[in-house]
Amino acid sequence: MALFDEHDLERLRTVPLLAGLEYHEEIGSTNDYAAWLAGEPDVALPHLVLAARQSAGRGRGGNSWWSGDGALTFSLILDAAALGIAPRRLPTVSLRTGLGVLRGLEPFLPRATWHVKWPNDVYLDHRKVCGILAEVPRPNRLVVGIGINVNNSFAAAPSDVRGRAVAMSQLAGQPLPLVEVLAAVLGSLAEMLVDGNGSYPPPQSHAPWLELWPQYCLLTGRKVEIEQGQRRYAGICEGIDADGALLLATPSGPQRLLSGVVASVQGVR
Ligand code: BTN
Image (cartoon, rainbow, N blue to C red):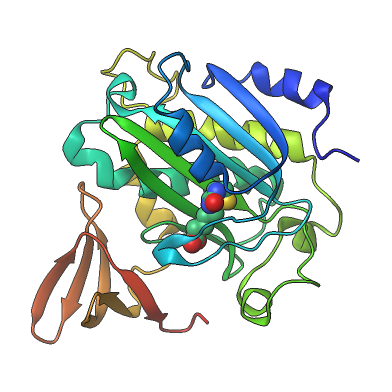
């Protein structure tokens, strides 16, 4: 059975953020396809590429992305200028996406513990529920790829994924309405990504992402280790700044990191 039917797609067409959408039962990677599509002149943006299954899903750092049936896997093609996102704010897009995803998902499990993990993961009860891969395939075009564990099982997943990941249905005790989860995430992404001074209308309730971040940040106040190429920084996280940089208090003084991989977080596996 198809993961989304025509009725679901009609529902998604009512989401104000989207100018267009397409659905694939199977695709290599929605990000790869969206990067190609972003070069086509007649595609109205924002455009959603949604897939039931990916045969070559990609994660950050050249890793592959595993997802089972019942997960949400999609990419959004965005025009940064139309959203009002200034070039120097582009590094904040993945952070804002994480926060947008979290705020869209939270109402489905309001009693659970929700965190954003800099730079771009969403955690549910201290396990990864969503990964984000933001890419710039050409000037002024963004592809934001999002994988969310909603109704999928991890029975067939590699053991490292099984140990670190969680699906929302595990906590809910039942499957969640996939199309409503996606619609909620897209609505909340509009609030986080539209800056309001581009050609796209500003959202009605503009949630200030930077003010929301501390409420959900997994790393703040914790001892963390961040890898940046060959370098490794260890210190206490003091939050982020408006450019999306992670602020660390290290034994040798403050550090401001614009990118990196979180190698360890005290108290979190
Ligand atoms: C990560 O945590 O490493 C990022 C994972 C991103 C996965 C999503 S699934 C939809 C989109 N298409 C891809 O190939 N990757 C992203």
